Length: 234
Image (cartoon, rainbow, N blue to C red; front, side, top):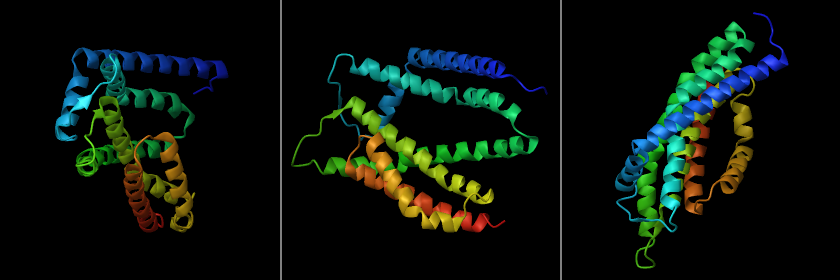
């Protein structure tokens, strides 16, 4: 296959981006029309937030929340297409061996993210919210803004998915001989420090939530060290 010029690469990239954006917009509109955001919010409120009464503090808050949630759900629905467009753009520049190895890593990585997100949603968040709400009893009445509640759930779910991918990334680095388990053990404190700093800067949740998430990520890091020790030598 002849090498493409810079302008040809840019044209190909623009085409892939246009397809991706149009697909996400179409999926987001469909999601909004069928009222999927309403179903998601009601499910979260009923099964995760313990039927907590949520409040909207501005006239436009609810509709803006539904539009944002529609966009997020549109992106999720279009993930297979987005990955295909990314793969179609990148794969011509890879060797056959690199394409094969990359393809083998995509599915496990996505599955780990899904497992981590579901674990955070179903196992971590309900008792965490129950604990936090129990601390307000006898002191104050909890009036939770709907946007803040959904952002709280979204952040924990996202971090749960990313955290479960951490061991896979560490094993890949060990298998590629970029780093080994000794490197991970030696630099664990730096990783945890950087993660906590990023968590404080990028998220707007309570200190208790940040501590819980940091502990879960630390557990994932320890699992990654053990797996890189076992699998990295093969």
